[in-house]
Image 1 (cartoon, rainbow, N blue to C red):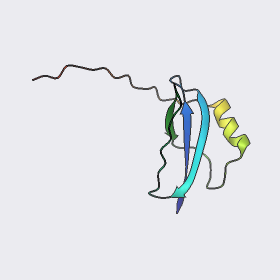
Image 2 (cartoon, rainbow, N blue to C red):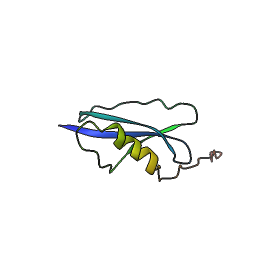
Image 3 (tube, one colour):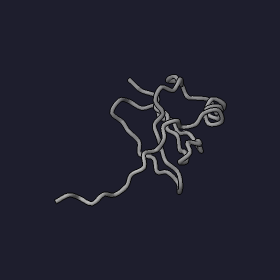
Image 4 (cartoon, rainbow, N blue to C red):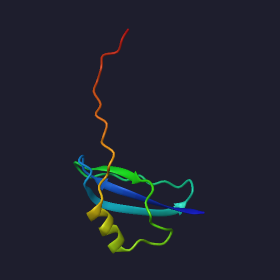
Length: 81
């Protein structure tokens, strides 16, 4: 069984720069290296089926959507001894 997985390269504001899709058997993963200033997120709940997405469908997603979840900011805190 294969699963269509969709990944977005995006900036800190959620603007999608590019999309990558993978249709692979369960248990197979991919490691994507973002460019400078980019992050990568797997998009859950997308409506793409198990067929190869059209270029238009991917462009429509990038144009009309953004990554909604804000990034968590992390700070360093001194350990308690």
